[in-house]
Image: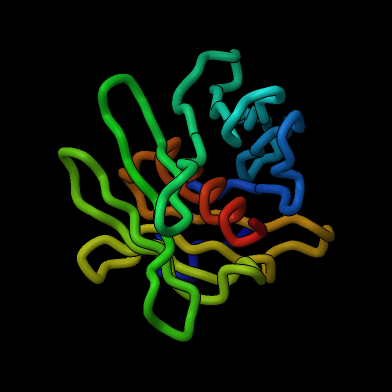
Length: 166
């Protein structure tokens, strides 16, 4: 995909937008077109739920909408570790805050609806999301810095995409 010039030196993945409907599944592909992760939309649940699985079907994260909260929230759970994604209430631009239990918090900001945004930790870009890298409609890329928790970053993009459309 030739994305190394964006200042990030880690892996790149291809996501499909507007398919995060409950009951829908889709594959996340690496930059060689290999199926790397699967997003499984669980039907017949009280809350919107997605499972991020590895290529072999092993559950990596459970991603769930939090109902009855003051503002939109989704949780990302892996064992006893949890991250919460919520939209910031103040501000003109789209801005999401990701509170990571036992880790460094993140934020996603930019043009969320058009899939042109960054994910940062302590002011440093750890991932970039963009549609401009693809000619395929309804597709966007997630390019990460080396050493990032790939499934966590992908789970965050699932949350942000789902919340931006909700």
